[in-house]
Length: 164
View 1: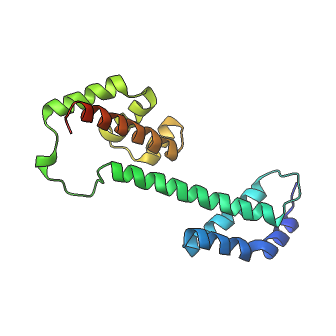
View 2: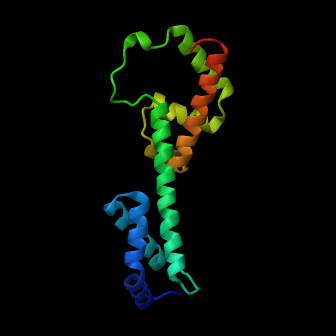
View 3: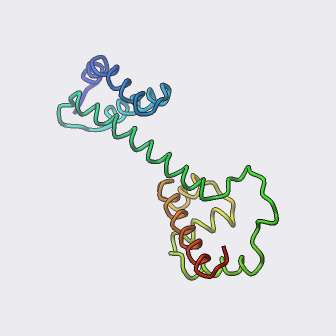
């Protein structure tokens, strides 16, 4: 198990290199500090029984940065797919009652159960992604993926029927 003195020595020896890597990947110094901090916190909280090297720390920072970037990209893609709530919409662009009924039928028949639950919590109950993730006991990324896949299916089916 790694002790406090070992972590302090690792911090002194590798912090700058870890921080520079995080900044170069994220282009945000505050976020970079948070990620490097999280790596050291995970060392403190874990029961690692091997010698931690600088390479391990660098890979940990790299992986956390890449995970952060991936999660942000998924969030952005879903936000782009969804109508961002703060935008104003022209009421002429809204679907008619027949299309809405067809969408509801598609949700009931074509969408997998977990994705259907995400859609209902998001659009019927108006919950945020983080609350949906907590209710369903899944990650926010999984919520985004379920929603993205469901919307893709709905668009595809509406395109097949010429409703879009």
